[in-house]
Length: 356
Image 1 (cartoon, rainbow, N blue to C red):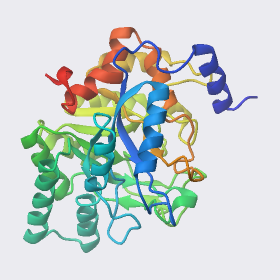
Image 2: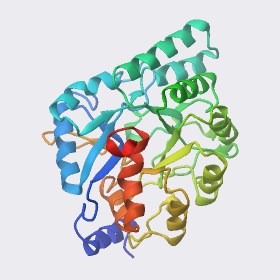
Image 3: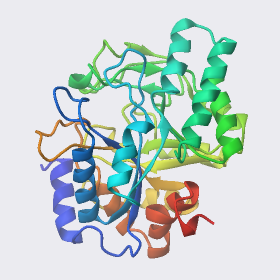
Image 4: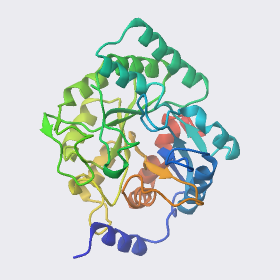
């Protein structure tokens, strides 16, 4: 019996070359650059950006939104949006940027560890958030409420947990609403307390053996300020076994300010969470979901681009991150595919003429 990835590769060959049928190209709303050098996160980002543009051109991506990974104090990569300025100058028009993955996320998780938020913390958080937007970022991200550490990359891929309704998340929602910019949020959503899933990529420690419910807190964040647009990333890639269509449909119907971006990978992730079947075809039930929420769905590959001159580190242990979302969009009716692949991102992030 062929693996899921083997069937996917076969389907890709049958369905034709990537990038066809989308006149304006695609917009990837969730991408990372990996610095190369003495460590996984050390050195120049320009080579990684060159590799990203090459891959984007191959698949038909017009733009990508870069962001720092969600980081904590004393991490191995304490950079934020400012690290991408040289990249944007070298490749004008190809990249927009989100900020706060270090400057804001680290403050949130430090306050969780400290067990308090004082007035100085709030002032620093507001000052950083305002500075990020004033410097040209088109939103906030990547922020993390529940973020698992992935196996062999635990040294730089930390376990992070903060209540989605933490007061600094609520404060950020108010700031985002005031400026009409989105928040890109990584959150494994847990309806109830549960043991760490028995997934080979997840090891305890650093992940805890027991996980705490956070669904109610997530809904409180969404309800806190309806003008705050929250993008729940990684639809189609679920490590907890809880993110099924039933949960996503209920949340999308209940919370009109909830958006989602598609990450589709060969592995890992629960098969039921994936919109493409073993044959690479879009599942009918997912088509219904996409049709119902066509104005609030985006592509967000979660690709980690690396310079071609270095041996690639398989950061995500995944496959097809940039290709598979394109395959999903190509199987949609043209008008629907244009929304998911291009228009929604351009409008939400105010990236061009279609944002009006």
